[in-house]
Image (tube, rainbow, N blue to C red; front, side):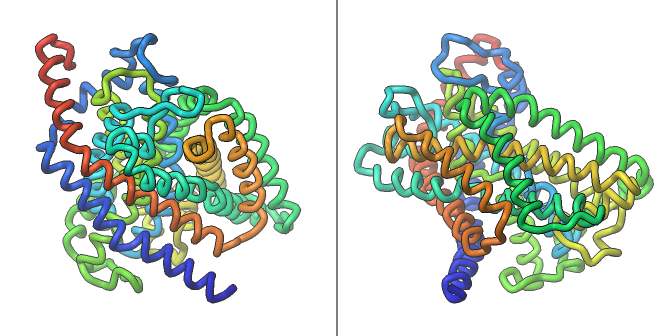
Length: 461
C-alpha cells in the first residue's frame, strides 16, 4: 500500500507539473496568437451579455449567461484562491503573483475557445435533451470515431469531480481555525458531524438538478466575492501606506528569484518562479481542464461566441480579482516574511494580524461559502459524465456516490484517494485541449462573423 501511495503521489505531482503546464499554457498562448487578442477587444460587450442585455427566453438551453458563469465560478473560486496563493507567495514571494496574472490572461483565451465550442457543438443525451461539454464537443465536432477520447474524458470526470480533497481541506480549516483554538476535542465524531452538515447542504441543492444549482450559485458567488472583497479592503485600508510598495514589488520581483525558495520540481531559478506562478494560476482558474464548458454548455443561447465571451470573464474574476485580494492581504500584513505558516494558515495569520479576534473567523466564513458552493458544481460535472457514459436516466446514481464521498473526505485523510482524484482531474485537460486546438479555426470563423454582423447592427456595446 505504501508503494501504491508513493506512486500515486508522484503521478499527481508529475501530471500537475510541467507536461500539464505546457499543454495548458502552450495551448492558451496559441489561442491568444491565432485570435490576435480578439476576445479582449470586446470585454465591455462580454459584460453587457453577462448582464442579460441579449438574453432571449426562446433560445435553446437551460440557464442564463449569468447563471452559467456563476456555476462555473462556484467551482473555481475556492481553496485555490486562499490556500494556493499563500503557497505561491511562501515559496516564490510577491513575483509569483505576476505570473499568476499571466496564467489568467492565457486562461481567458482558453475559456473563450472551449466554451464557445461547448455551445457550438452541443449534443443530445439519451433523453434527447440538449447538453454541452468536452465529451459532446468531441463527438459532435470531430465525429463518432473520436468517441473513445470523449469516453476517456468522462471516465476521468467521474473520478476527478469527487469532492474528497475539497471536503478534507474544508474540514481541516474548520478544525484548525474554529474547533481546536476553542478547546473542542477534534476526533472522528466531530469530523463526521461536519461531513453530515455538508451532505445535508449539498443534497438539498444537487438533487434539484442544474436549475437549482445555477440559481443557488447565482446568489452565493456574487455575495461571497463581495464579502471577501470587503474583508480584504479593511486589511488594505489599515495598511494603506505599504499597498503601493507591494503592488510595485509584484512587478519588479516577477523577473528575479531573490525571494524564491524553490522546491524539488521547480528548483531555485527565475524559470522556476515563472512555473510556480503559472501552475498556481492554472490550478485556480481551471482553464482548459474541461469543467467550465459543461456549465456554459447549458446556457440559454444560440450564439456560441456570446457564451465564450462570458466564460472569458471567469479567470479574470477568479485569478485577477480574488487571488490578487488574497495576495495583497498576505503581503501588506507582512506575515509572509514573519510567519513560518503556509497555505490557508498563512492567509488566516494575515486576517488575524489586521483584524485581531475576528479576522480568522471572517476568513473561515469565506472559506465555508467558497468551498460549499464548489460542492454543488462538481456534483453537476460528475453527473454529466455519468449521463454521457451510462445514459441520462442513470445520472442520479452519481449523486449518491458523490454524497458518500463527502463523508469519506470529512472523516479520513486518504492521501492515496486524494492523489488519485487529483490525477484524474488533471487528465481531463488532455481531451479538452486536443479537441479545442483542432476545432479552434471554427471558433475564429464564427467570431469574425459574429463581430462583423453585430457591429453593423450597432449592437456591440
